[in-house]
Amino acid sequence: MTQLQETQEQQHPADSQVGERLWNALFTARDAQHALDKALVDCEAEAACSQTFPQMASRIRNLITSLDRKPRHVRIVHPRTGIAEEIDVDARLVSSVIFSALYSPLTASIVLTSV
Image (cartoon, rainbow, N blue to C red; front, side):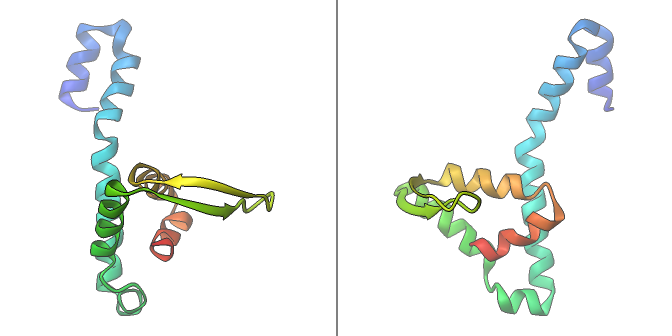
């Protein structure tokens, strides 16, 4: 726990649990970006990965920028039900999927193959 968190808990004990959740939320985006950056740097440093996924950082950046300007309407097949659905894919959706995937080493490794 940081000094700031300890001070907050001492001054507002009833709010300490809410405060901790808020504190964690403040750094969620930063930590997710750090995890993505690390995965990209690690891939760039590994010959096989960088050859398989060349210029991945710029590809992700370009995808997010493109979808932010113009979301795409796509038809997908649900992986479990096999039912085809049409969805809108925008930068927020892709960012959310990447963010969620970074929580597990297995799904984090899949991020690079999905872009």
